[in-house]
Length: 142
Image (cartoon, rainbow, N blue to C red):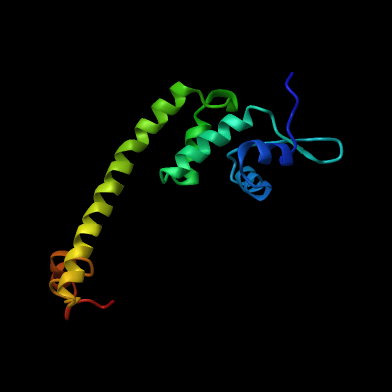
């Protein structure tokens, strides 16, 4: 059986801080066994889970969604390359939508900077399509 890792060893090998490991443990993303002296010991395959967590978080997947994805793995086993392929495919559409929204916002920002007016009825950032004018009497309440 592989030797379990202390929090310091896991932090050093994963590049994460010990408080981050403890946070991930509280969030249910990783788990540790306890020694007779109540010290945490992580199975070595926790490194693979941490790599999965970091990759998913890096592209903007919330920790709750990462935890839900990891919870689908049988017996809490570490994710495989096939697991990553399947789970990351489910996040692709959300990431594509976020990229499209950010691209639109960036493009609207260029127009807003050019006009400089911040007009409540024309501003593409503050009031796209004058939606507030159609729904709120007197325009924006912001």
